Image (tube, rainbow, N blue to C red):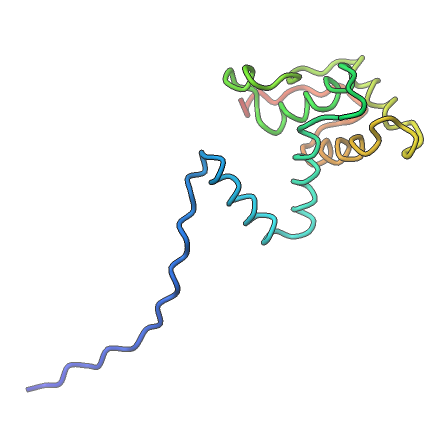
Length: 144
C-alpha cells in the first residue's frame, strides 16, 4: 500500500481580535487607533490637523471665523448630507467676505492672533483638503 505524503506542519497565526463595525463609535475608534499607529508621520499629521479643525476655535468663537474655516472644512471632509445638517452647524458655501476674513486671521503675528493655535490647524486642514485659504472655494458636490 502506498504511503500518503506527510502533511506539512503549518503555524497558525494568533487570531486577530474582531474589529467592531465601522458604523459604531467603537469601530471608528479602533480604525483611528490603527491609522495613528501604522500611518506615516505625514499622513497622521494631515488627519490630525483636519480632526482638530473640525471642532472649531474655542477662545475666538465669532460666527465669521467658524463659517470661514470650520464650516468649509466640515463640508470638504464630511460632505454635506441632509443627516449632517441636523447635528453640524456651520457647513456650507464660501464667499469673498469669508475668504478675506481667513486672510485677516493668518496675517496677524502668529502668537498674537486670537485663536492662533486653531488657525494653524485650519491652515493645514485647508491644504490637506485642497481648499484655498485666500480665495473663494467652490464646494465639490460629488462628495455629497
